[in-house]
Image (cartoon, rainbow, N blue to C red; front, side, top):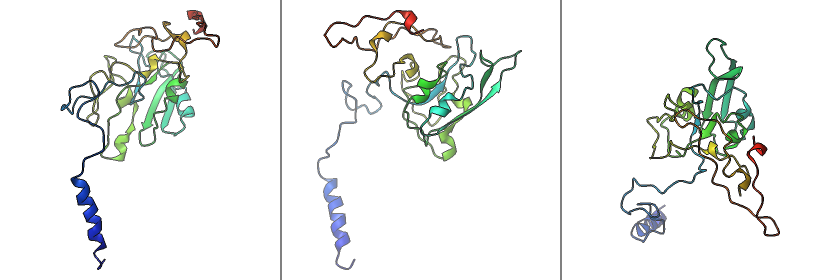
Length: 226
């Protein structure tokens, strides 16, 4: 390094410090007042964020311990152990319930396949995506952390940065798997009620869609989707 080449490297660094930055304006989202770093742009309805385990309106857990979510997970980040319900004090309406439920967020890719595979909509995703950990053990969320509270709202853990509205809607309310959506789901209620929310409003996020000949596709009856 006697030729001073390392000084040339530092020279590039110092030069860049005083150049105009080619980047986005992060001081406020589109349509928001600039200069307020705490304001974020509105998030998409189908944003895949931190998972939650839901309850029915009567407070019983929706998870039946079937382990389908763990089986379909491509990242192998979900661990579930089912157990038989106590007939005198059942945890869920089925024969079994999720006794152990863990998600390792160091592996999770937020693909939402677990949500699609769940037969009872027990697992859905919130809009929270800003959370970090100071140690690896915090990245493994247990059932106690994932399960919604007595009011039906997700628990807000100390290391999570929740924003207004991120705990009021989960991705479970839109169920079409096609990227373009399926217009036949529009306006049809086909999900169970949730603690704190009741039965959600009908699906409205799908496009109307048209046939190849340009004519409108007929809407399906509620019986076609169960």
